[in-house]
Image (cartoon, rainbow over all chains, first blue to last red; front, side, top):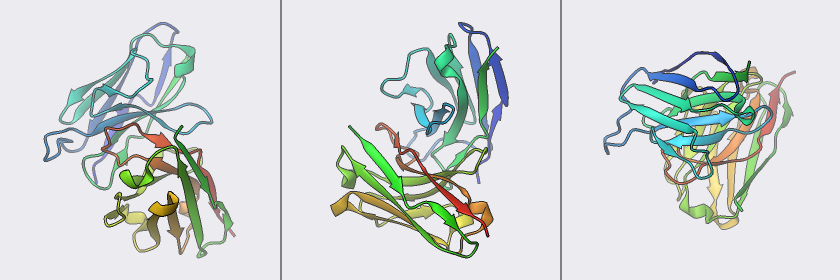
Length: 112
Length: 119
């Protein structure tokens, strides 16, 4: 199985400051069709997960442009340019290239 | 408006069975892969099973193979998860998702239904 490793586990951030979450996969996430199926999900307290980013860097509809995804191969990053109070929650990377689909362990973003 | 509403969760004894349902609305159900994803209390997310639009392809995580069966009824826009031989480690909130893991269309998730396996 592809192991997804996120860091840090916890990320205290000052409002208005940037935040960055790293995700590494144990093998390349490039699929035979040439696409890289790396997604980012946000789970706010008490809510269902919500996908923010698909295929590394594509924002889902309605996702603020302060969220951005980047990376390739096995190394990926989610950045929040200026953290707002509503961004508090747990963020998960997830690979959709190899079955079984797997998630990272999560990064908890909180306000300092 | 897309809606996914799960039902069927509850308390079941180890070795027992449960059938989860997901009622979909607001989109053409038969055009999308569907999935079940679970989250144990206080833990992370685990993708459990996927099913293709026509129901002919199904994928399962190893830990549920041979015990769980994903199915769908396109005529009634419903997704199911039949869970047999339940174990304590199957205790989790189960989410229905309009997402294949590699979808480029919007990903939608239900509110989840809690399954508790305990004696």
